[in-house]
Length: 415
Image 1 (tube, rainbow, N blue to C red):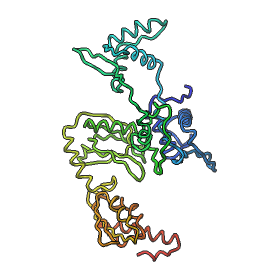
Image 2 (image 1 turned 30 degrees about the vertical axis):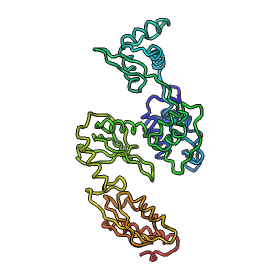
Image 3 (image 1 turned 90 degrees about the horizontal axis):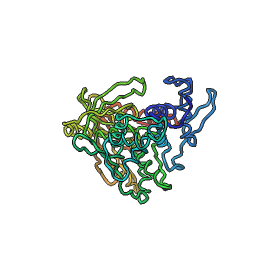
C-alpha cells in the first residue's frame, strides 16, 4: 500500500511518535514492533508533519534524528498536527455530505427516512454507486450525535435526528485567549482546533517552560476527564514503560495531576482490587474503556482529599507511612522574596517565621525524597535540615560532598 500522510488509527501513531521522539529515536534495525516497511511509512508520515522541527547528528553509529524545538521561536505546539491528519474513506465523505444536506433547514428525520432519501434522491443518479444499509447509516448518525453534530429526539419507538446548527460563535474576540489556552492547558489541542477556524491566529505568546510532548496523551486525557465528569469507573490498559508488559486495572478516576517540573500527567484513582489510591502515568495508558456509574463516587473523593493532604508529588512511599521533614532557612537584607517563595511553594507544608531573617519549613509527607530537587534550590541559605527518614538527609549531604569534590572544594568541606 502506498504511503499516505493521513492516519486512521491515532493510537498507533501515538506509539510511533513516542518511540521516535519521546523515548529516543530508534533506527530501522532497533525498532522491532513492526515490519521495516511499516517503520519507513510511519517515519515518513511523521516527518511530513514535523519536518521543520527535526534535526540530526552523524556519528559512528549512523544518522541520529531528533526533535529540535526552541520554545522562543514557535507560537503553537507542532505535535497537534498529528490529531489533524485523520483519514476518511470515500463512503465516509459521501455519507457526511449527504446526511448533513438532507437535514439542512432544521428538518428532523428518522434513520429509515434518511436511508430512503440517500438511496432515492442521491445515489440513484449514479450508476454502480454503493447503497449503504440501514445499520451503516445508523452507526454514522450515532457517531455524529456523539460529536455534537446531530441531536437525537425520541418520538414513540423511533429516534429522529436534526442538525445542531446555531448562531456562529464569535471566535475572533476570543483569539488571544484561545492562543494561550492551546499551549498552556493539558487539553490545549481543543484550542488548537478552534484557532484553525480563524483566518489568522494570533502570534503573541511564547513560553519559557513549554511541555509539548504530553500533547500526545490528549485523547487519553479527554476520555478520563469525561469519565470523571460522569462519575464512571474505567478499565485502563497500561503498559510498563520499561518491560513493555501490558496489564489492566479497573479504577474509579478521581483527579488529574500535572507536574510543574516536567509537565508529566497522572491519573489518581481508587483501585478497586487493591482497595487503595493509585497513580497511573497517562503516557503509559494505552486504552481507556468506560464502565458503569460509580454510586460511591463521593466516598472515594473523600478518600482522595484525605490522601492528598500528605502528597508532595505522586509517590505514596512504602505503606503510606509519613516522613517528617524540617528545613530552616536564613535570608539576608533585601531577600524577603525567599520567605515569600517558601510560602508560595510549601504545598501541604507550613512556614514559620522565627525572626526577621529566618524561617522554618515543616511538612509531613509520604515520600520526603521527592522534596530533594526543591530543597537543593535553597543551598547556601539552609541553616538546618532534619528528616525522620535518614536516607533523605544522607542523600542531600552526600550530593553536596560530591559537588564540592567535583569543583575542587574538597570532600571534607561539607558537614
